[in-house]
Every structure is written in C-alpha cells, then in structure tokens.
Length: 121
Image 1 (cartoon, rainbow, N blue to C red):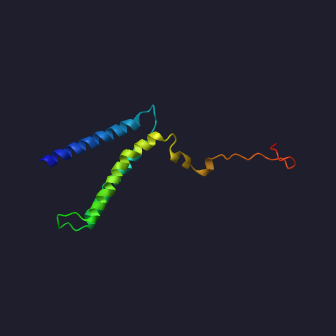
Image 2 (cartoon, helix red, strand yellow):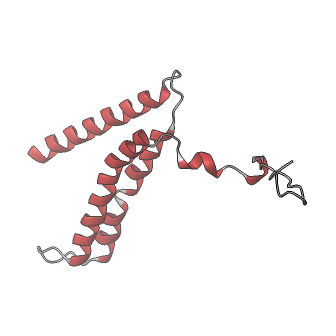
Image 3 (tube, rainbow, N blue to C red):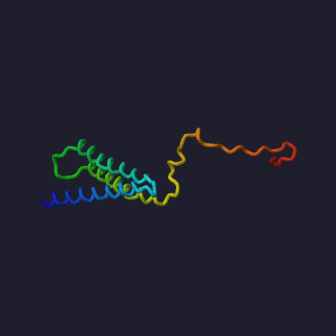
C-alpha cells in the first residue's frame, strides 16, 4: 500500500508541476513559450529504462550493467529537465532566434573605398 501512496503522490506532484508550467507560459503579458521545451525531457526520460528492460534478461535479482546505465541516462535527463529552465532564464536572447532563414537577413554593404586615398567615400 505504501508503493501506491508514493505513486499517487508522485503523479499528483507531476500534474501540479505541468499545470504550473502551462500557466507560466500562458501569461499574455510575457509571451514567452520557450519553457515548453522542458516537455521534451518529460517525454524522453523513460526511454532508456524501457530499452534496458527490453534488452536485459530479468531472471536474477541482481542488477545488470545495462540497467544501471539506463538509470544513469534517465537521471541525467531528469536533471537536465531541471537545469534547462535555469539556462533559459540566464540567456538574454535564445539561440534559436538567430536560426531564422537566410533570405530574411539584411547584410550590410561594406563602405566603398576611394582608389586614390584608401579612405571610405
């Protein structure tokens, strides 16, 4: 029964966290939707565990190296889910802003130099 209570508490806290994430991004005054990229970490975090569970043979009670590696990767993904908003809060301009199509960029023309004096016109 203690396992069920822990699972219910974990799912409740996850639901509250996702609700606060959606509310934080839905405020029209700020118009910032970059924190929604944290949802990617929530989606990919169980993938290493599922792969390790599928690959390893589960007849013995001891843990295998593959399963331990999957736990390590899952822990790294979960820690990254907490660290990514901190990085987004520290960066003034997101890097993806600079990845717009090249056709929209206006390039500055270099000043023309006078052939005699070497000075710009």
